[in-house]
Image (tube, rainbow, N blue to C red; front, side):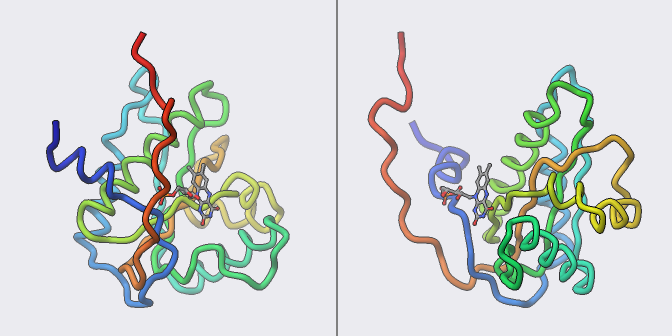
Length: 174
Ligand SMILES: Cc1cc2nc3c(=O)[nH]c(=O)nc-3n(C[C@H](O)[C@H](O)[C@H](O)COP(=O)(O)O)c2cc1C
């Protein structure tokens, strides 16, 4: 079987080279809206999605992420002009699951409209640092929320290499 959704799932790749130009607002909104349609445990809709486009705030996020990674000076977001942060309620046992599905939708939606995106780790650690804690209210991150992941987003400057084939025993039908 095949259709456009299955094709998009197969063809989405992590993009790690972006043009510096900002994406259109309608593109950003389409991607964020797709995130909001992810399922959540018990339908809580707990996750919050924060898109950052202010170059100064993006620069702080790039630095913070690199610092918590132990690689100061590099840009873990590959120069992407938009950085999306996904948080979810820390005391919800589905915190990471809910947030991860939001990110999955965001990655797939970005691909489906021709944008490049990549999950970037260390969101939790960024906002557990002293500087991250101080930045959180400025970004509208609610109290008691935990970073699940970040996404770099922008126009594709260089496509990703072909994916590795799927491992032979990835699924079983029993
Ligand atoms: C939980 C998770 C964390 C990831 N963290 C990073 C990251 O910090 N930096 C990065 O460049 N890619 C990151 N990735 C992207 C993976 O490396 C990528 O999905 C994987 O290599 C498969 O490639 P594909 O997405 O093109 O299929 C992450 C992916 C996931 C699911």
